[in-house]
Amino acid sequence: MNERLSARALIDLVIDEGSWQSWDTAPDHSAATGTYAEQLVAAAEKSGVDESVITGEGTLRGRRVAILASEFRFLAGSLGRASSDRLVASIRRATAEGLPLLGAPVSGGTRMQEGTAAFVQMVRISEAIAAHKAAGLPYLVYLRHPTTGGVMASWGSLGHVTVAEPEALLGFLGPRVYEAIYGEPFPTGIQTSENLFDRGIIDAVVPPAEIGEAVHRALEIIELGREASASDPADLPTPRPDRKVAETDAWTSIEISRRTDRPGIRELLRHAAGDVVPLNGTGEGESDPGLLLALTRFGDAPCVLLAQDRSGQSADHPMGPGALREARRGMRLAAELRLPLVTVIDTRGAALSAEAENGGLAGEIARCLADLVTLEAPTLCLMLGEGTGGGALALLPADRVIAAQHAWLSPLPPEGASAIVHRTVDKAPDMARAQGVRSTDLLARGTVDRIVPETPDAADEPESFCRRVGAVLSEELAVLLATGAGSPEKRAARHA
Image (cartoon, rainbow, N blue to C red; front, side, top):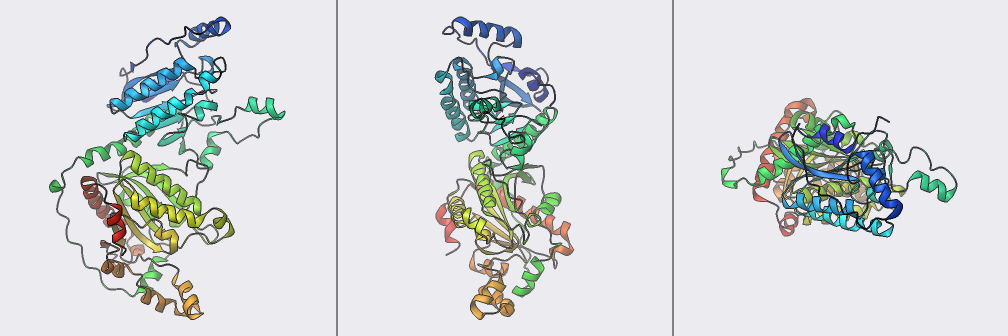
């Protein structure tokens, strides 16, 4: 563990030199008496600050940001009534002034000297942050060593994006409290930044020196959404006519889509996306390599991206219900940050296993469908490759749907459909043709709006193909940003 930085030293790493403006006024400690009053005086002398949090604003690469930062040297960063009043006032000011909010907690929790009066402040702080997010304003969190108790369970865990200091102790229950209650040490390796990342609870582990750049990259994408949303649809360039794609046999498309060297979402991001800020997991203890979640942009059009990742799926590790819960986190982010959502379908199908059933797979598919149909954000679906079963359908509802030429959508793999109808898998090609799974069939029915050609196979021209897809995504997103989200009725009607 590196030496712990003071609140002000951390702030100076993040903001532009000379831009800091404090929002703090003198705290009211008039109710403190006896030993506690003496502790407050000693803490101020030790830390050089008058409470356990400091708040204010500065500029980050020229952009105004509001900052809340704990000071551990003031009574272990604990929160009392005065520090909570300061936090709530600053959060509300940031909301009123339309500023992104950066939280940097480091704390042992709420202040024991104030008891329940301090403990219940978690409610006020959480409400203020919820109101900030409801206004469409970003809240980004940097968890520092240590962050525990009521701080971790309030403003430490409400970020749109949450990253943490390496090797930080992070958790609800302080290990000393656990040992005192249960008479044994808390298991090692649980309450660490690295374990929380592995479990899908935080998005990244970032050293303090790199946090300013990480915040800047995230805000660049988020702020682009506001700028693009102000565009007049009449000012957008007229899309070039799509090149008509050649008719391809359904089974041929399926075989092409199954090539192991076919470009997936990672190749698309490498060749066609702007800055990419990866996110991680559900934030609730699950992470599935079969789904990729990120903030990114195509051209000048920003989005929240949630994509089925063919490189993270295999016969041994198919996409599970946790991937769909992670997808639903992406949907919530898009709505809260007022960014378009791009979903990418590319899956052999969701897991068919006891674990998937116990994890509520069917319910997660249903909730994804309901969330997407009613999402208060513009939505764009890209059918990139294989599209098997409910796991694929879960990401389909959108205002616009585009498909790669050899992408397809089917309730089962054609082999499975053949086994049901013909008692043999040998009729799989015939089933694919009969079920209308091709991108051209979906275009004719109105399920798909555009087809991106492959010339003749994306695996043989991966970079050119990805750039074509990226250009279409950029064009479609620009229109969606200017026109806004469609209605649930329109999203559902395309599948009538």
